[in-house]
Image (cartoon, rainbow, N blue to C red; front, top):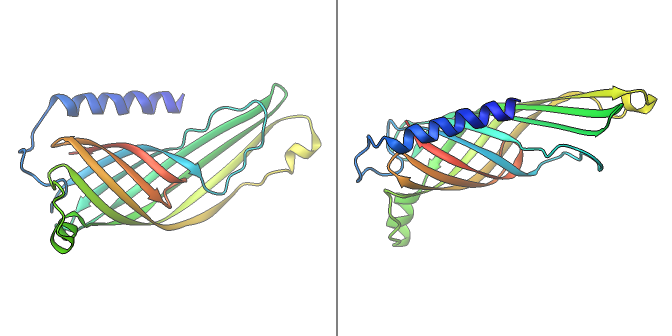
Length: 197
């Protein structure tokens, strides 16, 4: 249910952004004062093994917001949700994970063009590196009668820290897609949509 609601909100925001075009065509993908909202899904989950058998497909959802403090550096926060259920009737496990924290982002397209002599279109393409610092909590629930089910898994929490490299491509001045490789909120690869507010 939470995934369905998130998807509806996400699609509504994308529709609103696609019909509006408030930015000039010659604006760079990232500039001082920009606010961007990025929503996506993580793949290559880090540190989780859900076993086998009948289970729901885990779709880790992530969102982050970024504010440009100058032409190269952005800061912001991120949050994520992962819910998985598996097993059979009378012997079912449910796993819930929440991840949240802060991020710092360095946007390097302009520097790459100058130093390496590249000709990357800065109004469409944004190469960046980011560093995450956060926290995640996870909780297991078991619905069944097996004695081992109560003691197999434990709830807990852990720190999230790691770098990632990313690329963002804008189809319109305020809407595009992004891909990040490295330590994300949940996985090694995150894909999604990016909206400039």
